[in-house]
Each structure stands twice: as structure tokens, then as C-alpha cells.
Length: 80
Image (cartoon, rainbow, N blue to C red; front, side):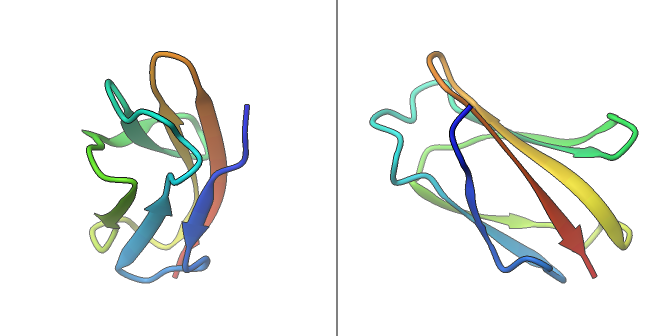
């Protein structure tokens, strides 16, 4: 698993994911889970820098995972 660059952290309404380290974004998805492991959001990524709307999420700690055919990345973030 390689590190994931997300900001700002903590975040309030928008979270930016920077995936410049990936050579291909084909079949790349981002998923957000709560600390109990429940999937809350999942979407395909087509740009190396992607902004996610996290405004609907309750305040707390979340796990963000990015997966494609060859790589898996994970990071925690705080929603304020």
C-alpha cells in the first residue's frame, strides 16, 4: 500500500485527493468508510486531482481508500 495525499485534513465540506503518483487512473475508485467499516461513498476517479464533497458526512474520523487494477492506497481523515 502506498501513501495517499489528501487535504485539508481535518476538512469541513470538501476533500482533495492528489493522485499524481499513479501512472494510470483506469479503473480507479475512491471509497469512504466510517470507523466501523461501513461504506458511505464510492465513485470512479478520472483526474489526478479530485475533489470530494464530504459535507453530508457527520463529524468524525473516516477511512479513505483508493484502488485500481495494480495499486491500493488508504488514509484517515477527520470531518469537522
